[in-house]
Amino acid sequence: MSRCSGFEFEDVISDIEDTQLVAPHLRTSGKIPLNPKRWLSRRSALFQYWPSGVEKTPLTRNYDLFFCNAQKPLELLALDAIPNWRDRCGLAVCVLEEVWSSGIEQYLPLIKSLSKFDLIASAFAESCDALHRITGKPVIHLPGAADMVRFAPYALTADRPIDIYCMGRRRPELHDRLLTTLAERRGFYLYDSATKPPTTAQHKVHRDLLANLIQHSKLFMVDIAKIGHDDQKKGNIAWGPRHVEGLAGGAIQVGYAPETEDYLRYFDWPESVIRLPEDPDKALDAIISILDDTAEQDRMRQINLKHALQKHDWLHRWSDILKHLNLPETPKMMQRQETLSRMSSTYIDVT
Image (cartoon, rainbow, N blue to C red; front, side):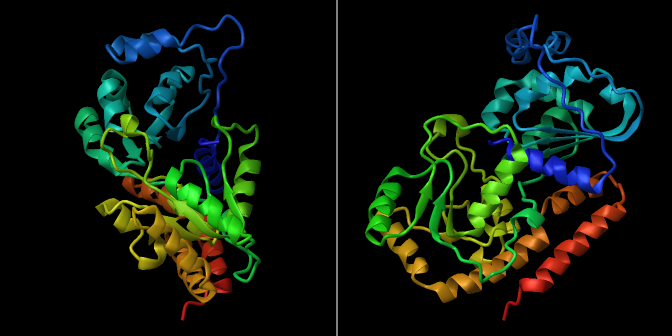
């Protein structure tokens, strides 16, 4: 399900641009193992000559722009499925949703191959300098966003029976206290119980469900990326789409967020997140305090939705890419901007 956010980005682009989606499949029989290609990608540029086992889908005509959306750098190994993408496309941009410094060092030959692109966009600001140094190409910070047309609530007065929604990883000590306290209050604490990452066959259905759940939640828990997994992040401080999705659905975001320049640039208003103390007892007190203050929730909700509609739709991320490539906006982009402005004026009244 972690891929659904990126798929949503692709859907929005398809709505506002004249696009062709190319999504080759791994061969079901007689496939060539991917592991040798992965092994080589850590050691030599020769990895590019080992087939990935993904079905070949050559482009049959020319395109103005090639857009590659990869969650992790290793997914770039499947680019050989479109063998002529560079020859057939005038410009090319690669978006990396998750690239840790340790991954850059570990797969240096693979990262160097990004030099074939005209623009690289990283969701992690800390990785931008290293990517630019290695590839010699422009690199921009492009954080996650949300389809605001899908996520924004139809009415600010809608019922929100879920007291707090904690999606994915959580802090065990705070989680235990929430379980006990919300049960005593006869509240509704929503959290994941699966021990393995769940999968979905329909990303749009999952995004609709997620939006619906957040639209009916008072509070939404956020945290710094890979909390509890220091072996993966190796000192990096990053944040993901979750820090936008709570705002987009009208929930009040509570939890832990970076104090980094990139985070404060995108969330430059105090209501964007209620920062909780590290002490779990004090964090619980802060959560209960905001749950009991419905007037403050309403005030923050209006402010947050206004900012989300102005800054955190996928349209805004796509516009950033086009600006760096000196490409004009399309009429459908302008129509979507008008829709976002109309939504804002309809139910946002910050006084």
